[in-house]
Image 1: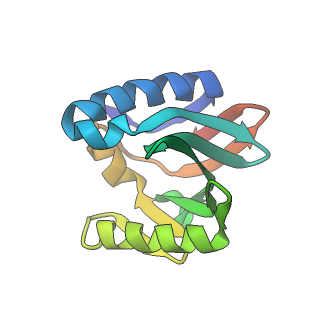
Image 2: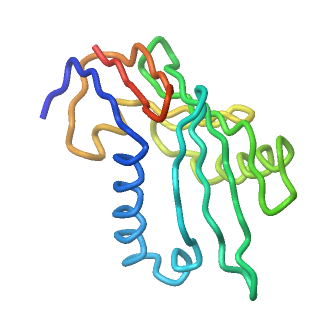
Amino acid sequence: MILSKLALTLTESDINNGLTAAFEKMAEVHGEMLKKVKEPKVTLKDGTLIFKCKAAMGFMPLPIEAQLRLAPAEDGAALAITLSKLSMAMMGGEAGASAAMSQVATAVAGKPGMSVTGNTLTVAITELAKMRGITLSGKLNDIAIVNGTIALDFS
């Protein structure tokens, strides 16, 4: 498949349905670890993608929330994903985000099309698309998160 132009709008419901399916599929491979993640959910609000879940640790589930900002990068050739806040129970914030992104940097070191600078993961969208058998011949112009939707403009 070759993709050269796309205007796509996804709702929270669209994303959460896909998230549920993705977690079920990943649980087949990473079974025990992912079974500890309960109630994963995405909320789209004021330019921010908010991911929430509960982690089964001990007798009480631990609430986790990550706030992400998405933006085109490298003149539309990449997607910048900035972790602005990470909270676990009552701890976290910017310090939690920095610690988590340090772990992400280690995980993506040497992977083609991926890099971490500060709290931002930059992913080359052509590399991301290749993973799904899609050839991209354009650039990411805009990502807007407004009123429970995320809209992407690619041309």
